[in-house]
Length: 156
Image (cartoon, rainbow, N blue to C red; front, side):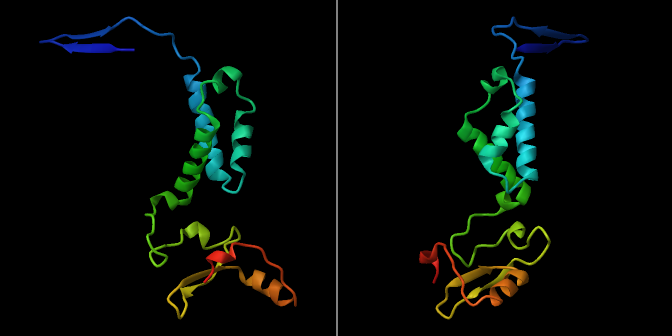
C-alpha cells in the first residue's frame, strides 16, 4: 500500500492512497513457516530435505501452503540455510583440487574426532583426501576381508 509523507515549513502530513488489493492475512504465517524451515535445516543438517519440508508443512493450513514457494524452491531454502549454518556458503568455488579448502564441518565428526586421515599429493601430483576416524581404521584392521562401493572412477 502506498503512502506519502509531506514536510512543509512546520507541519508534517501523512497520507495514504486507497487500497487496490485485499490484505494478505497469510503473510505473517508464511514468514513464520519459512523461518521455522530455515531453523530446522540449520539444526538438523543430516535430515533428509524432503522430510524437513514435510514435517514443517504438516501443521500448516492449506491457505498458507498455497502461498508458499514450490517444493523445489523450498528445497533450495533448506540447502542455503544449511550452507550458511555450516559456513560453506562463505567459501569460494575452487578451480583446482589444490585450491579446494575443506570446510571445518567436514574435518571432524559430531563426537569431535578428526575425520581427515590423509590430505596430500601423490607422486603424480594428484591430491588425495582420505576420510576416516582412528576408530574406523581400528575396525578395518580387525577384519581380513573388506567390501567397498563408491565412485572409484574419480580416484587416482
